[in-house]
Image (cartoon, rainbow, N blue to C red; front, top):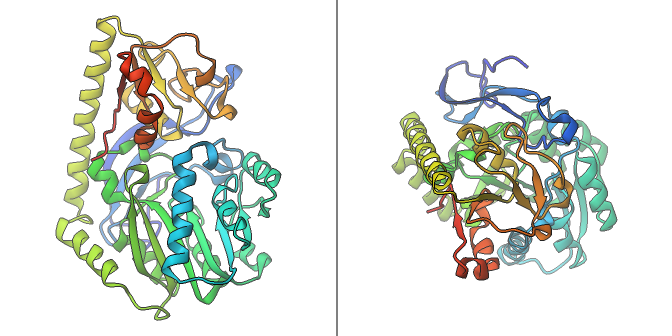
Length: 401
């Protein structure tokens, strides 16, 4: 696909480049040995729409390439499963639910989110385009459709849901408006659409630039997301910022004028306005902080190597590849990445070509773990207390505030 000429939301051509991260491979394209050096590279450039204030990528890697057979698993970490359980509790408490309901999860992955609702007797349906994760969900007896969600699929499903969830998928959307129309079609009159997304205000606050990669086409704040929803007879009526992933926002959406807009949500919008969260100057400050972070990390790793310190990567998350490739790290800097997700066993990180090995199969320890899975910091530090006592350093390249 050619460079984007119009905003994905409002179709304006008034776009400004914020940051060029260079040509990078698709971050989830973990490689077999015979594929190393043969991966495709694509532009990774963050731009800003001067009309509707949304930030987005200026190039689209086709969804069939990125999501048809990916290896990300929701259920691999206790932190994420616990977060989904917290969401379930919040839904039941917030809406004072006494009876069983129907819930649709779009981008349902391995069924971890829906499993929490199945456990309490709700009717559940998932939509998941990845064949691998769809098969895992099937093994858990989670009712799942192995397709991309859009308006056409909504017509095929053709039933109403009290709740529709989209966790970490709303910024992926190539068929943005078709997707949103499909949600509006399947939502009960009084239904609630729950969107869990990486909050751009948190990304900027934490300088978490590694969350910018080809799968994430759009980067929302509350104001910019509400602008999109309003085009399809939907609106946010409440929101909550969760600690996970360095600050993930969850919004509760209804049809327009069906639910009262909460004071909490209006206050969050006011905070964005006062901070200048949706101003272009905020994004240029972000760019400067990314460049400073790169300098700090390069200095740390280079000094460690000079002092003969052995460095292993901790985790092989998708976003870690965005960081490794922008920083220019290879096996010369980090000889291996240790992972618990067995679907990545024996593969190589795209671009850097660092091999992925299983954490539980190691016979040697490094002096330093360079933690790419920084968003699970608390879980990682708790799990590795004994190693820390032995003097092994856990370095977090992105340190959430």
